[in-house]
Image (cartoon, rainbow, N blue to C red):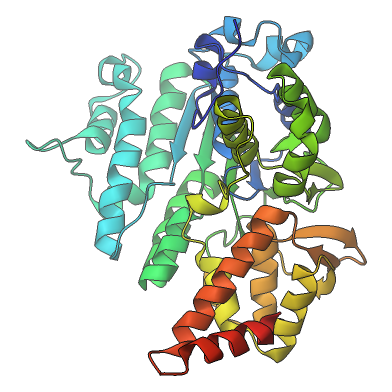
Amino acid sequence: MVKKLPVGVERFEEFITEDFYYVDKTMFIAELLQNWGKVNLFTRPRRFGKTLTMSMLKAFLSMDCDKTLFDGLKISQEKELCEEYMGRFPVIWITLKSVDGLSYQKACDALRPVIGMAAMQFQFLEESERLTNNEKNMYHALVNVDKSGTFTMTETVMLTSLNVLSLLLAKHYGRKIIILIDEYDVPLDKAFQAGYYDEMVTLLRNMFSNALKTNDNLYFAVLTGCLRISKESIFTGLNNLNVMTITDAYFNNSFGFTDNEVKDFLVYYGLEDKIETISDWYGGYQFGGVSVYSPWDVINYTQALRMNNNAEPQNYWANTSGNDMVRRFIYKANQRTRDEIEALMEGKSILKEVRQELTYGELDDSIDNLWSALLMTGYLTVKEQVSARKYRLAIPNAEIRNLFFIHINAGCRLQSGDSSDRNQRNMNCRKAFM
């Protein structure tokens, strides 16, 4: 029986138990455990498998690990490493991708259930003989809900929540804990767009400092996100941060599908004749010198092809977000930037200095900062590294090129207003870009 296509599946356990096609990325575990720092940050564009990777890591490390999930996978050959790490740690895992809101208070309301539901995974702490009554009360503050089922923790409790949960788990199990934080920068992005960025920075800075800097019960932590937010914003004083970005040569095949993985995938589903089309539309990314495809695109287009072998490629990845970064970039473009966009649309590359540490507040300070952000978020890719901070950048594939074209047209329509010469002004605007 042919394995199911994992459209939208992000839980590692579900991949294995429900017989979905799984591209074996378990050697990420070995590479991490042989090279980990106290706090490890991986930055990759959205829809490149960050959440699945964190789910896999939790499944491997957690005390309730089902070791049969890893039977036959590459990591199972690392006998000594499995003996030392598999199923040996209390693991706290949260994802911040849903922390959104039009106001700071609404965002806090969205954060409470994220923390509360994570804490509720450890309800045995209420009966733990190793915890004092005061410590059990600290746990209750994390999981307490009102009559409507809404978590009631105060903002003060939220700030120390991960640290407190670490303390309680470490005391119960008698060993240090591991913290996994997925999509750590999503609340900052949403706050920046909605106008409460400074408040969200303060909240996350305090919460992360308590959990990652002053936490004596921490063994190590892993965070994922799109942007490498500067230490001056939320990682102040965190000197033990080990950062792996899309330009680094290590972990370069851990996120996204490689050429060989895509070929094997398409051969399995009898679609090897579509390799060139998928490469043109969804490949072209370079992570640390390795050619990478967007998994979301490859999986969704494969599903479409299985229903209709003549299905045309679609903008699957580009349509999963508001693409505010591209819109902001297009609207701020000066004549020089428009000339560079024209070169990119023609398939050329441009030389740019890339800043990999930014705050969202700095994005609008300079158009050059937006170039860097477009690279980190997947709208551009590296063709060549020229020096320590200078790279030749290009549009990776037809999907992203089409996205730029759409937003150029949209920007031109907005600029044209309702005047009688709208069509001519639209044409002149597009010519300025193209």
